Length: 360
Image (cartoon, rainbow, N blue to C red; front, side, top):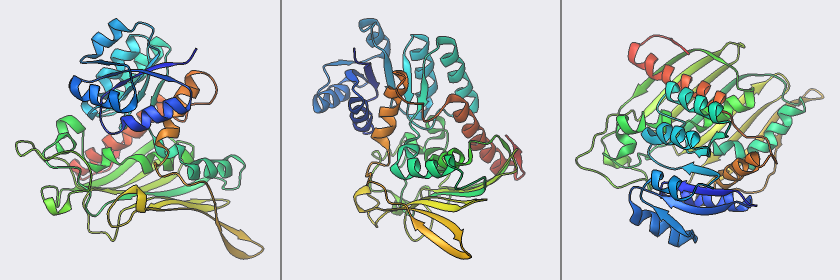
């Protein structure tokens, strides 16, 4: 029998979750949203039979439900995940894992208590470029990665003003917590070392300037607040001696939107990169994947050719969740890794506030 999955939240990311789950052979049986009209619209678009206005009502009506995916504002990730896990459902949660590391610890504990899978949509791990680069990690070509640089920078990418993205009580922060993908991917390539200390700073320039609004996001809310950062820079040292520098922004005076991980290993260096066009849309992006080696006294740069993947691994990441539940693949991420990632995010915010290094 196929795995039965419900979607919690009728937002735009639902299309990728539904696509990936169906690719893996799962059955999408329901969509739940506090705005049931939105749930009905999404269900109609994607051919899902049932909708609910509450998670409690859905769980009561569908006791044989196997799993849920959570696609809601960040504040509700942890409580919904704990609720679903406690009800005996596997959970696939959108990023970030929670508002902070303490919340993710609670989610991890609920997963362990229920013996159910808890995974997060760190979809960039599921890009063809990332799979290919991990093969070079696994076969020893890259060796030990001593240092890496993670970057997701935007020039005009604020996702609406006064909505939940710019409200710290709902989002937990700005681009640092929203665009944590490249920090996660860097650590994935590095073997997810345990962080030791962080030095970081945040910048709020342009966070209220509508000239820096992105081409997507949610509608502006004139009654809302804009109390998150527009950019963050930081440096992480790990207990292994490895290091990571990071730059993330929604609004920063850079040439163009860039999403990249660059690393320096003992056997080879490399880069995974996506450059966006001026419209900031996936359809105009340029992807590249490279490996840097020394051969016979020469510096050799290799282009790694992979299949195109416009959605940055989103559907493949969702498929991995189903395959993991069914024992067909290893999970692309774990709750322990999510806790480590959020410890770094927490420490950067702490360092930015204190002006001093922060322990993780």
